[in-house]
Length: 347
Ligand code: NAP
Ligand code: ZN
Image 1: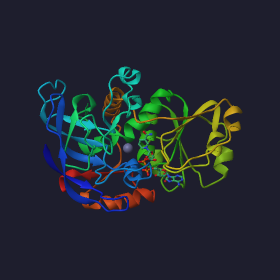
Image 2 (image 1 turned 135 degrees about the horizontal axis):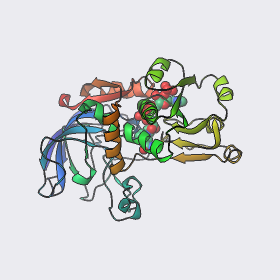
Image 3 (image 1 turned 120 degrees about the vertical axis):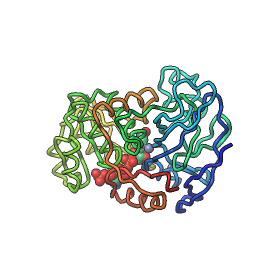
Image 4 (image 1 turned 90 degrees about the vertical axis):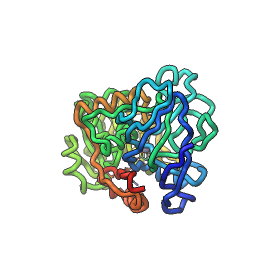
């Protein structure tokens, strides 16, 4: 066992505290990573606050991990000490179900689904703890390589915000299509950059016009405020694909009306509350209302290589570990430009 430094919450309402957690002894197929940077995802906030269901405390969140390999188990083939690597939202899966065999581990149908990077029980019976820490031990198959052309602090958010937006843009073939991105936060700004690199025609739908200049700089062609009801009449039947990144429930009927015939509204934002919609909005133009979870390990590597090649990187605000609580409050106020990243040497 390794004892490592981490930032944890001890209850849903608590502030972060510095603590020591245990990482398992290296198994043959394990990689020990010295974490350099960890992004703050809105999912961390949903989870630590118990919004998605009960979790055990202390809890160390963090599933946007970038670091350097500092040791490898005896059978590890892909990585060596010194390699630049990343870990995202999963650290394992059953490996035996159809989805795992087809390389879609994020949809693992094993008894517990994929093993989350934090707040999950792994195959050794340990409660997983995430990336707001100095080190992590992860099985080789769930580690990805960070291209040299992406600085580590900018690579971290790609491990969740990057792949979660890349995957549906890829799956629903965004290239050449009219794509709207709802919400210009961590995921949203990556969706705009990636969709634009895929040569989609991108429109941002944000609550206000306050970030319009940024949105256009990230590659959007148009930018509308959803607080203006004109937006919804003006953009009726305009989009082939809408990527909704909003962390709260929306009036989905109004957004469905913006889809063309056969258009799809993909939800990646994961509000805790139940939502409702009028089925007639789907029927009237053969529209689909869909969802998408992160992406596979293979697709995560593909996304990193794509971002490296196209020089697509998140806009980040680097913070020290004593500023995590403040960063959470700012994310909740939609005051994030556009991803907080923790410099883990400050833990
Ligand atoms: P974020 O940085 O907080 O961005 C969310 C954006 O949504 C905000 O910046 C804001 O954009 C907009 N927004 C927030 N509250 C709103 C409201 N009440 N009404 C309308 N718009 C609102 O969060 P994130 O880290 O990008 O994560 C977004 C969501 O995706 C979270 O629910 C997270 O858990 C989920 N997620 C899902 C997956 C997956 O696999 N599906 C993976 C990662 C994250 P504007 O200011 O531009 O309006
Ligand atoms: Zn995330």
